[in-house]
Length: 290
Length: 335
Image (tube, rainbow over the protein chains, first blue to last red):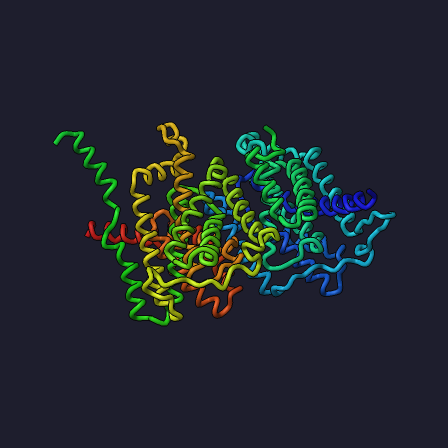
């Protein structure tokens, strides 16, 4: 019984940590989909860029994970803003297929660039000493790293929620997601709001990429590898809904972790099957408002 | 002649006009010239033809039906695995293998189509991607290893001589003619489909699904039918690949193949069938050269190509040619 409890707790911690990483990655994507109706398939590439920048900084031995994190996230935000102001102007003007192709093009460029600069090895950012510990309480063991991910992600999610609910900018963004045309009519500068949000989304993805390297190691195909999971999070959560993304990321993270442990024969198949069923049940997203 | 006869005649012309012309023979003549002129490149030519078949099937779904699929590789992979398993366990006959693979592809379309095609837009894109990823994970899952071979894939099977006459030689001559025949068959099927009343309905659905529904067309069932046909053809491409390389791996279910097919189509131009042929030929030949030099930096080229092609030549090479031709005609009529 105790052993079962210990396993379940360990799986819960793993699942929630994985779900939180997925949530941070999907924030920018769900806003892009909600406001601009654009499938930005290159979103995961920003997580990879952030991860690699932090990896380079930490490898240079002048930085630790904590000092590298804000620098890398800020650098990714600048890159995201620059791309949003240039290449994405083209993306906005084409049809759906064109948007998909252009953003896949960006993914390929990112993959090639990652390979050019960092090679095709699996890389993970080394953790500070205390984070690689395991805290043991009787039979139950916590990984300090995963506990930290969960704490940090909940903190970030809380700050996001406060900004969305209680600031003018948050109100403008919510209005833009609900009805972009109407928001424009009442004088909200929707493109500007969107540009800021896009950059912040890139920064959050970068933070997730950096924090998650021990779970999702960096490699050139990273940008494509984790694109499908975060697309699933967004689709299940409902386009444009941060709250939906949060819940669906949690659920998918847990389903995947438990599925892999209890049905090893099926491997990653469990999660895809679950998503397919969920989307057939509610094509607009399980957590979307009706 | 009465007005009704006139209209009937016009309709008949509309259906028959673009069926086949002397232009359609050009790619095949080119293939024959390659055989006699550049014998060294037969294996590459075979690869080109496999990808042309795949691109044609995608053009049918995407260019004509407007089904923006990111997971078309699922049909390719299913066909490849079906052909590989069939050759291993049932019969080494290649043509029979192709037929079985086509059935498997159509069946895959029939099973996934009604689920996926209920949706439109972004949900459809994600569902196609999710289906393809799911099938790849399934092929890789531990429970399926005894059948699919997991990461090792299928290998060590042989094919009996084609039609009992032509053995598959090391130089790839039989494979070359075999692939050419398959491409010709695929192209012919596509031509018939897109020029049939069914093809017109499909194009109508692509351009305005709501209006087609109001006209009394059962939109979803038409799309599912198209998805099955396209799936069968893509499975034939996969089976062809499995047969000529006598190897099936997980990469025959990988997203990269879907991505490549999209690049070929956008390069050549969607919705014309010729675009698929031109695009696939250029893409495979270029990537063969580039892969020999530097596979990863080739991705830079593909990436930038996608971005700039969508921006500056959304109709692809075929679109550019048509554009130039129109300008030339205009210039000639003025002169």
